[in-house]
Image (cartoon, rainbow, N blue to C red; front, side):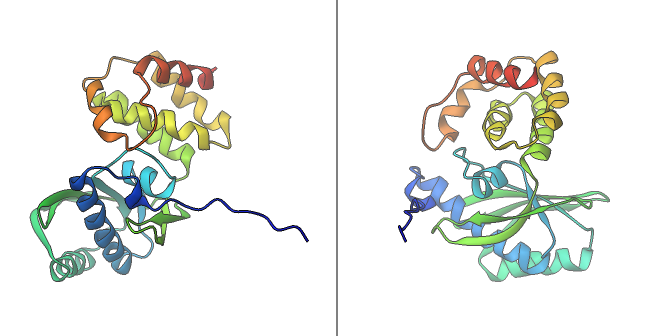
Length: 220
């Protein structure tokens, strides 16, 4: 029987050029391992989910999750982070959300949780060292909907880029057309277009015009 050749995964650390990004990536891994130790059914979403679970090439220093509101477990989570070398710079727990800033060594990262039930899909989260951690995240179609709303709300180029990137992963085109049409019809110029260059880890950096034209084709 003729054998098949599998493409070898390039470890994440080989793709990250900036020292600060590498340090943040390692801190994210520890935070995510701790999170799933305490909240095994939590759902990761946002830019870090795209980067780590869908082989994205845009760096993200935030961790955004959906989780059931449980104040006791939240305290356990932060206590465990403290034992693992984190300093909690800021923490605010509200009725529907948790906002926090964490420091690990010389870098900081933002950890935010929305208290709601979210339907997650099981995916592999790639760590800095190239290992795989099983996590729950959103499917590409749902993530696109969130990113469209995010762009229209704050007009950051990273959100437009995320929509552009995620479209290649869509399996049900009809499910995203209404959101894409909303984006095209209400599109306004990004407020931080030049920032994308610092966030894309490798490959070409598309301009907003090219990305919008690509999105428009999907919206038809």
